[in-house]
Length: 273
Image (cartoon, rainbow, N blue to C red; front, side):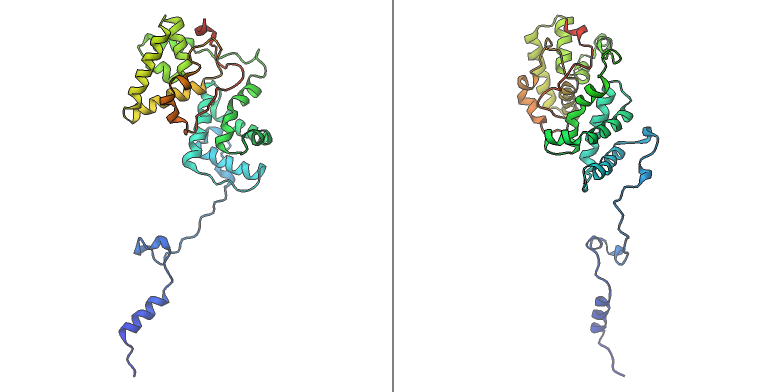
């Protein structure tokens, strides 16, 4: 009986095995364990009837599903960035004293119903572009009847923060125009001193740790989110006044080069006079 060379036998065994997947090359113990490819199809049960059970990921998936239905084609969800945009939509609704999850969904539905207008204005229909229509949604759908939609009162909240020595929080919660107008009109701060002190504060935050830099971003973000403003308010030109610092945030998903148009959503008369 002819003896088989052990080297040849080893080669035959190697070539008789299936070629490992690229992912298996980093872990030899995964070889020959063929995984079933997970379907990327969105299941209906991923959207609970109870809107309060939705999270940012659910809203991102909902956008992807509705995109396929109303726009056509496949929208590839990038949860890292899309979830942030969905959170900014939720924050907008919460800032405006609305049921945030309910109105976030209504806003997405409204966007798809008005997709032609959005595409005509923005060229693209994406989470980054629909966010620019948040104020229009509010103006058209919420404030269409001024008699039944009162302005949101923030004066008492600002007064409470000031009384508790939380002046910096007034800026991070209400933005530059609101806080500056309050300090100048209600606390008799000098306009030029406000600008100088703000610049010093912003430079300190910009050179600080992660939390301090995040605080500066919150101030700029709220300065956008709290618009539109009254023309009589101060530092409406904050983007230009603090451009050396604000320009670094232009790539953030929430950034807008201009304020929202329309009527103010907040009762600014109490601080503007």
